[in-house]
Amino acid sequence: MELLVRVNLGKIRRNLRAVRTLTCGKVLLMVKADGYGHGMTEVARAVEDEVDMFGVAVTEEGRKLRECGVTAPVLVAVCPPEEYGEAAALGLTVAVSDDCGLRKLAEMTAPPEFHLKFDTGMHRLGFAPERADGVLYFLRERGLVPAGCYSHFREPCAEQLEVFSDIAARARQVFPDVLLHIASSGTVGYPAARFDMVRVGHAAYGGAMSVESRVVAVRHVKAGECVGYGHFTLGKDSDIAVVFGGYYDGVRRGSPAVAVIGGRRCPSLGSVCMDMFAVDVGDTVCSVGDRAILMGKELPASEIAAMRGTVDYDVMTGWTGRVKRVYYDDQAGSETEG
Figure 1: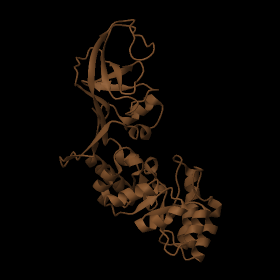
Figure 2: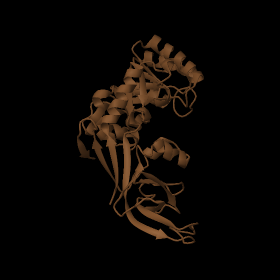
Figure 3: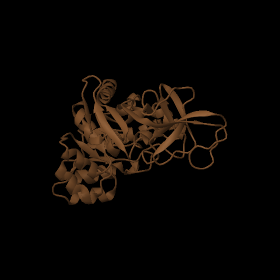
Figure 4: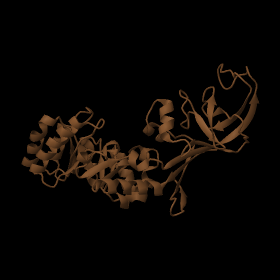
């Protein structure tokens, strides 16, 4: 038995087209973390003609894209200098964000394509803004030409945009063809932040995934009796359903769980177990084998995230363990297993 994760590739394609229509520029789709839980290679192959570039976190992810036949440009966000040779051989673009990276580029006879990253306020990776002129001079003196220059918003922030705009102007003075980008899903609606390209994740994947399971048992439990491990006691007579899927599969133990059965949202009772959890079905007539929706149109990732005190990305990437992915296009009518 498995959880069924259904991914609507047609929805992702339409989301990407909407982003391009809005921004009128280039679009980079982030496919790191297995395509935010949607399946990196399946998504990339399906939408390669809709994007200008893909984004991954590490070289290994870039290699997997190349191995599955993806030929579009791929930006690797965290690529240590010792992997630059491999990146070049695979035709990957690396993000260079420190002096070690600059020195490695200067040493190589055939360096990879690269984008410069500047830290405008998130304080993860990137050169300090005040070093922009020095970095650009270093590259020009050594005949190294960056393909891009970018930064990362911590949130929609006018101060960060002002800092990056200054860096962008300096970079373009030295390297006229450099590709500038800072906007992500949360800031594509901010016209001044769009520059030459936007990087999107959530804006592309929103509404494209559903997760369903099955009812494996139905019980009538009397008030005062316990459900699950520990001492969770029912306050009233209740009809409960036991749903397959537990914390091994992405149904979090430390937060409320909900299943939609027969169109009704059924809250969890007691603790989520490793393989299953119990829900209160109220007056819904429920039978073994009934579908139990764990995420989807009836129960969006954003609502699950709010219950858990987290973010959509955490929910979307959390469906692991005993999971089977099925890919379909709601317009083409095709369906395949991943």
